[in-house]
Length: 214
Image 1 (tube, rainbow, N blue to C red):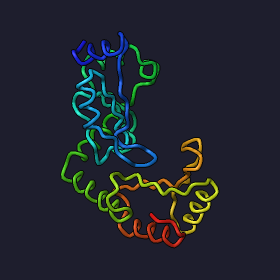
Image 2: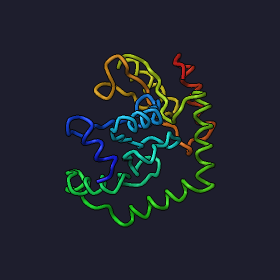
Image 3: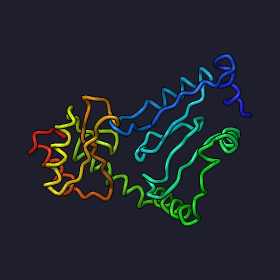
Image 4: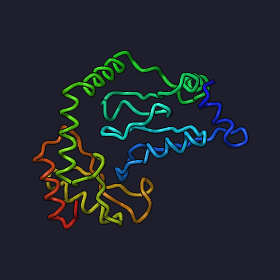
């Protein structure tokens, strides 16, 4: 068992102290202060667990953290992963019901994920991330992630605007309770590098026309 893991068991009268966070939150597209959380965990002996499912543009979790994520969003494949100290990985292998009772991924899925990972780390990947960043700047300058919420309040208003966007040829889902809290219904815009600048401008203009600031 690693020193980090032993310190977690000591942190709270024998129970492991965990700090668990998304790196990018899925409904608001805002970022967790991962560096500050890592520093806090280092000084208190807690174990930091970071879900990087939506972290295509960062922030990057520190090496001391347990990192979990999916292969089905940024990489467009199937499956997920846990990256951690070997003792933590072995603990998951032997005790995680969701791992023990699942069906193994197909070789073709693993090959697709590896190929996508190679693209992500290549010059092409750099260009794709730059294009994604440019799309975000077109819709909401300075926003930290490709998840751009358009807060509308009521369920009725969110559905009304989503339906109106369909008439413009734009599919932007209305997000309602229980996914979000009552009174915080919204459109959830999920930008990608596959969107063209013209498509993003069309969305932005349509939102303005509907009286909704993007």
